[in-house]
Amino acid sequence: MPKMIRERLVDGLILVGTFPNDYLDRLLGSSLSAILIDPSRPNSELFQVIIDNEHGAFQATQYLIEKGHKRIGFISGDLSRTSFQQRYDGYLKALQLYNIDFEEKQIKTGGLENGYEHVKNLLNSSQVTAIFSANDINVIYGCKAIHKMGLKIPDDISIVGFDDIDVAKLSTPSLTTVRVYKEELGSIAIRSLLRMIQNKDEKPLTTVVPTKLIERDSVRSLL
Image 1 (spheres, rainbow, N blue to C red):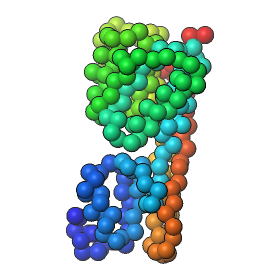
Image 2 (image 1 turned 90 degrees about the vertical axis):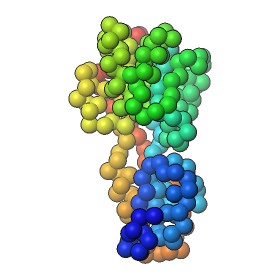
Image 3 (image 1 turned 180 degrees about the horizontal axis):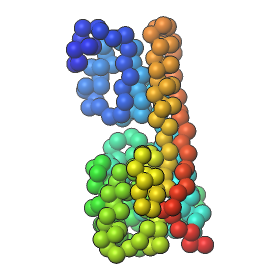
């Protein structure tokens, strides 16, 4: 347990992302006001600010489908992380809406920076024309595999990411991706935490922050 919590040097906590369950239980059991941003285990009994992961992934996959792609691969980190599972669900939801079948070999998951291996294995085992990645980092690493196989983006393979990190617009070609409004996540969390500190009886609230598809140069239309 951090010293600032043990010695009650703070009035509240903002917890971002993934924590081991036992460690998270200890933090939340400290009786301090706490709010979770994009937690590893959403819980309606806690104050949370969450990303609309599923709909963002649905938008990304739908965008590829409407560009004429039907063989769409999916890569991500470990699906035990809730945000990646939700993005996978959004991908599947879009395929199902458009009655597009997929095979298990079109799915490569595990690790946060395994994009090179994921993309290489995906291209060697399937005939995808596009790849949706549940985070930008994986697909940016995967670009090296695409280039080493003698393929070009987007002429031979289209790619879409998720997060809109700074490198996304600087990559060549610039990456079409799903923007996550990180500043808004933090702003909502701080305002919510201040209200919680002032009113201990406030009922838990979950705030969902929408995403936005940012169209750049990494997707080719097949229509």
